Length: 100
Image 1 (cartoon, one colour):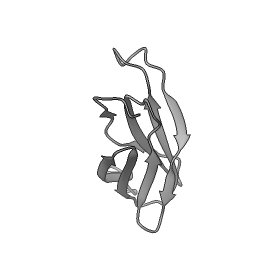
Image 2 (tube, rainbow, N blue to C red):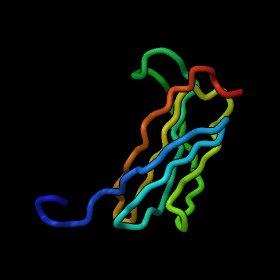
Image 3 (tube, rainbow, N blue to C red):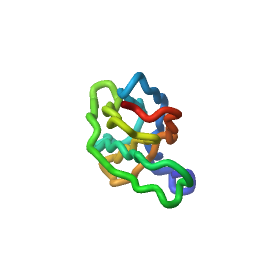
């Protein structure tokens, strides 16, 4: 992007969780075409944890993605994929008490 003057990556501009509802907002020079929630129910060191993936709801009108974090999740993050196939990830959120 900087060396060739091309369009940049999507940028996550906001992120929050309310109960089990998680969302991110973004700005992107290329349309976002996919949103995914990645989560784990495992505890302990990060490397051996098993992660699951579910589709998230993509609201292209408002530039947001929303997901319901499954019960028992201990951590999650969201991925956004643009039309070029480029992926950006939100910050991971470690849930102190797993969601019931």
